[in-house]
Amino acid sequence: MLPKEIVVLSGKGGAGKTTVTSILSHLLPDKVICDCDVEGANLHLLLHPEILWSRRLSLGRIASVRQEICVGCGECARHCRFSAIRMKGRKAEVMGEKCEGCGVCDLVCPVGAIEMVQEETGWIYRGGSEWGEFFYAELEPGKGNSGRLVSELKQQARSYAVSAGVRFMLVDGPPGLGCPVISALSGAEIVVLVQEATPSGYADMERLIMLTERFPNIRLRVGIINKWGIDESADRDCEGLFVRHNIPIIAKIEFDEKIVQSQLEGKVWVPEYLNEDWLISSLGLD
Image 1 (cartoon, helix red, strand yellow):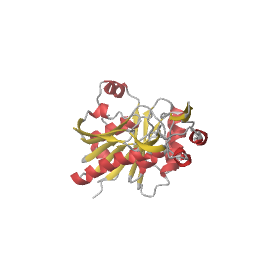
Image 2: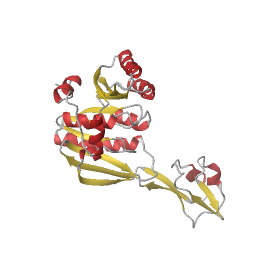
Image 3: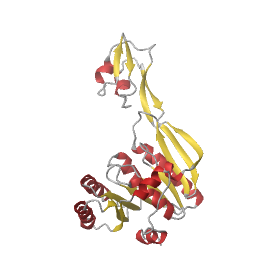
Image 4: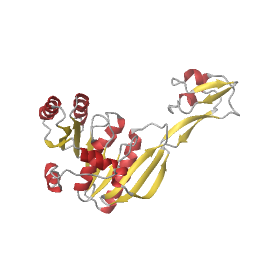
């Protein structure tokens, strides 16, 4: 039986998404935890999992020139829209940091001197923690995130949850609105939207809500306002946005130096007004 997927999202980085996920990880029973913010995975710094296994990822591809065959015609360089190929003497040379793996150079090469080879993307880790089995990924320096990487990471966590009979999968999603976020939402049943009470947080959340409305599999969307109480006007804007979209606000987390200090110490501080009963009731899990 598939676990119920609960995905925590925010329209922007720094809104408190990982902070909220760490709190939920302490309150939600019988779950596996998955950090899908692979460009800045840091939930493990708070949950301190013991790494049980890791696996190398090769999800992309990159052009490679077979120098012994290249005749130096320059067709590949002329057709590369990313300027990833240059002519060095009478031979073509690929600048790997620019190559997007589109394969056009392979198609136009008249002598078949170019081949597309697998590119090492990063690592997937599985660890055990006090609060549940934990999955996260790390990118190689300079490698870009992709929806495919997030999908692979979620699939690993989902497969474990099924085999172990775990009821829930708690996902710390990527920031923004791009392909990684769409992959994180795939299969989600519940979405927790974390909005910081600032003008930029308000604008980004508006777009994120519009995105989540396009996923019919999502049965419940709830809102959590972070850094509540700093600006009354921004607080009202945040409330009004959720109200207009019929999204219930399940918590208003006030800015508290205890949260900041606990994170500096690599710990999770759970406000006393948040508990397991509140979470189960708010997400309709009982």
